[in-house]
Length: 491
Ligand SMILES: CC(=O)N[C@H]1[C@@H](OP(=O)(O)OP(=O)(O)OC[C@H]2O[C@@H](n3ccc(=O)[nH]c3=O)[C@H](O)[C@@H]2O)O[C@H](CO)[C@@H](O)[C@@H]1O[C@H](C)C(=O)N[C@@H](C)C(=O)N[C@H](CCC(=O)O)C(=O)O
Ligand SMILES: Nc1ncnc2c1ncn2[C@@H]1O[C@H](COP(=O)(O)OP(=O)(O)OP(=O)(O)O)[C@@H](O)[C@H]1O
Ligand SMILES: N[C@H](CCC[C@H](N)C(=O)O)C(=O)O
Ligand SMILES: [Mg+2]
Image (cartoon, rainbow, N blue to C red; front, side):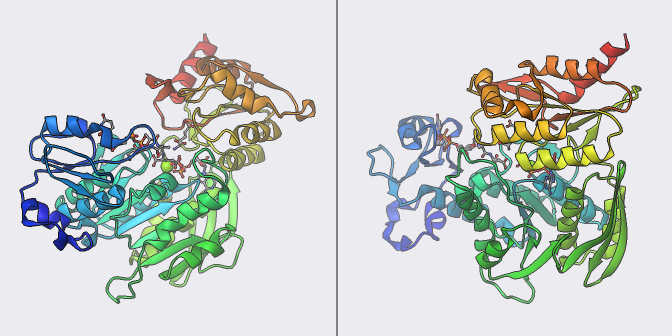
């Protein structure tokens, strides 16, 4: 594409003279990925400043630099006020606005994003849609799976990927939208048809200044849906009515609002809920009628997730009976309340709860059904919200009979410091706990202790297949380690 075309969306682009009318191979934001003929956009990051890599970019073949600072270079330099904004705009143009031609559904909230995207994927698939998903576990185009680094990738990756999805005939894109991505403008170029909010509870206070700031970031998804009351291009904000943030999020958008809820009177509701140790049952009540759902998903929070997914499916025209069939066919979500299969008379559950609210929800659910003791093996991630550590420890002790605190991706922190943060504020009256820094040993210990009808929850890593120590990822899978420990117990 000609540079002039890429620049055409930029305000007063006529200021860029014809000397800028050159052919561009691709747009890149990483000097290490530049090849001959590319345009390099300098992003000032949290770790380094892309402006410091201009020479490397030129050596690798960059023919134009887009920067926020006046820099001297041997190729033309275009100075803009905000390179992140420029990147999203240029990428959307370069890849020909892929999200204009396919419904895009964004899911945000502290917990439940991966679950809701998974449920929606299954519903749309049953409705004969060709779906694509982007989220924490992977990126998926129909049945092809690709690895991802972030839950929500950067703007460049997104636009390029959306183009690939559209070209491959995808007719529904479902994606998780993290607060980091919203704050960093990774989704500026995305044209959402539906935005879903699950809930807002404490997390990421290492990154956001306060819960208000965290909510502000989440609300950007709703604010950036635009103001388009076009009959053939309806947009919907789907919001959890039970969450206190609902009121503020409603005000963030001018689009049609669909509320869902269990407690509060909502447009889409779950009534007559029955929670059992093997699933949930409820009446899905909608303006298009009511239908009974019998799901294998465990816990009240999953009823809320099913309402969110059902709401999005309904507004896109999926019949209620298809929604019912899809929800009832789902066995479980990878790494979420996943039962480790074995012959012992006690249960081992691996779950991705890594926030105070999710840990409380999962432990409460287990507590309700446990016939004997509840064990929890849990840690807190390094280089992440320190203030959630003592809260998670308190919750673990409150709901479990035996809490074993251990490591979960210490990253660049000393695991001892993380564990001290967890246990520091715990009064003696809070009950006993143990600290076993090595996660494998902690899991083995819990499984060795367990007796008939006990339940062991291994929380925090879910689907993850690594332990991140420093900047190195070591293979580690809670489910594999649990199985090893179960075999060791037999012998
Ligand atoms: C704190 C944070 O969010 N950082 C994100 C940020 O990275 P950064 O600002 O550190 O980037 P940087 O390394 O300083 O680089 C700045 C620029 O220089 C360029 N560069 C760099 C080196 C070089 O040699 N040459 C070069 O050109 C880089 O390509 C980049 O354009 O921008 C990157 C690109 O978008 C992200 O991948 C990265 O996410 C990091 C890996 C991360 O761990 N983020 C977490 C906190 C996160 O975003 N999590 C959420 C999920 C949270 C949840 O919901 O639970 C997520 O969406 O994944
Ligand atoms: N609606 C919900 N409310 C509270 N907790 C939930 C909810 N749904 C799931 N959980 C809990 O949160 C954990 C993570 O769920 P899920 O992966 O769906 O969330 P997420 O928002 O995608 O998380 P992440 O921010 O890491 O991407 C689950 O393992 C479960 O313990
Ligand atoms: N998306 C979350 C995942 C946390 C998972 C947990 N295992 C940890 O490493 O803290 C984050 O990056 O904060
Ligand atoms: Mg997720």
